Length: 345
Image (cartoon, rainbow, N blue to C red; front, side, top):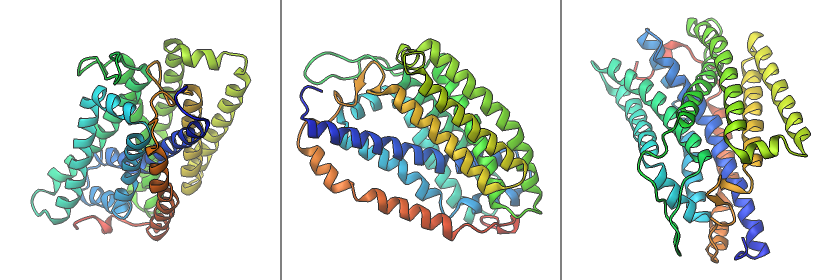
């Protein structure tokens, strides 16, 4: 931090917020269609599985661009974090990348397949599941931090499987449960009210809601005991701030549950997304000033050169364009469908 000027610190902080925003939008947008892919694994009707693909056909690739944006921000603003974290997370990120590629291939091949539609349906569902699990494992591993070498250019000094731990495996499971809930709400919102798949999604949502609630509680309690940087803030002199944040989050979850029970699908999604935003913002505030707890602060991992200014000028304008693009796509493809719209039908 001492090597950065005050202006560089302000810009670094702004890009840290932008990185968090990119990851949050990816989790909210792609998390829903990945969860719908997981839900499709439990459907027997081939047309209904194809209809889930059709429901996301207009937006899934735009949703995933936020992951690319997050990678670009990390590379441009925090190059040392990018290099060492990707080394540390090589295995789970490779699985996540292969899963995302397989999912895209399944979407395209299913559309043209004649005798292998069932195979591509399964490939789509399984790759949705493994993508979410791998990403969840990576997030849990980052919260643990990782060892670095000393020297002018610090690098990751551990082995290829150091990311594995009971906590990181748990966060992978928790991510799958959370995505399954978001996917159920997404399916309910995209299908006509009379469709049987919508009723199955309602049952699915009721089950995954309680599982997701349990997963969040276990993760919070586990983090409280496992990470001193978390307990020092949550139980510190400003504990009331975290209590208020927790109560607002609980209120959003209750409203989501009520909206889902009443069949107000859009409201249920919006309340869920508010709860996710509050939890994500709370996690970032808890971690601050760490970007990787115990390993990199956002200031020690930031680019110290003038390149951060060049990057700001080159990339800053993309964010409002991307947000408008996402909004326009969601608006254009907002209509409900039936299974007759099955992809490749």
